[in-house]
Amino acid sequence: MAPNCPWLVAAFYRFAPLQNLDNLRAELQQLGGDQGLLGTVLLAAEGVNGTVCGSVEAVSALLDRLRLEAGFEALQEKRSWCDQPCFLRFKVRLKAEIVTMGHQGVDPTEQVGTYVPPEQWNDLIADPTTLVIDTRNSYEVGVGSFAGAVDPQTESFREFPAWAAEELRPLMQARGAKKLALFCTGGIRCEKATAHLLQQGFDQVHHLEGGILRYLETVPPEQSRWQGECFVFDRRVALNHQLEPGDHSLCHACGLPLTPQQCELPSYVKGVSCLHCIERFSDADRKRFAQRQQQLERGDIWRLERGDECPSIDEPTV
Image (cartoon, rainbow, N blue to C red; front, side, top):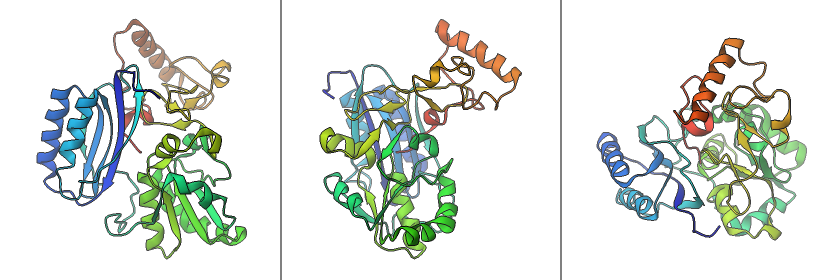
């Protein structure tokens, strides 16, 4: 996509030991506010994870500051563009993990799988001895994925270790797989997943460097093995192969993505319900959602209460 839109969106992460977190959080919060940035940056002892939008100069200022930290000199970002802000505010948060697996002992700063550049990914996943695994949540997989990839049917990344423990070895044996190829949106989840699998004794573990976003940026559509759109954790909802906003929208009751066809179903009421959540919430909930939607349409607010917020808007997960 040509950079003729005013808002640069940058998704980035890096696993490396990070110190002085309180001071760094305060400094980045001040910098982002001064530069007019929007989005979220997560800091933890294991590294940094963020998605922000703003002017080229503002985004560069943030990334340049992060690259001053030891071990973050090679921090890279995935870039896309949008014609309006895709976040509401700028937040820098301290977390126990920059992407939550919740499994003790997994340390991506010590060992991870083999990075596979996007240019080499097609050859790897075309190998019949390679088992391709989508490490994202099931609602993300439903928006798009690589042809033939395994969907672990997880609702959060916390569920991946249990799925791997119960299902992965039998699945590899059944399919005659010798190699594993993991991927996610921007690389952070599949990289951490490879660290876990190596710890559990798996070998020949690979992951897509830069994730789906780098693949879509690098591989021409006519050579692509990607099918559908790529769900992203901001107001654009999903991106097409040109890294432009796609056809999906978001249900602001449950936070799950919807196709245009799903928005035509009787279960869909804008801001109130959809096929995913029509049975999930009470009449009182839907009344409250309807009131909120009226406020949004009047332009009074564009925010989601904690109990109703969309998981895609709450935190970046690249």
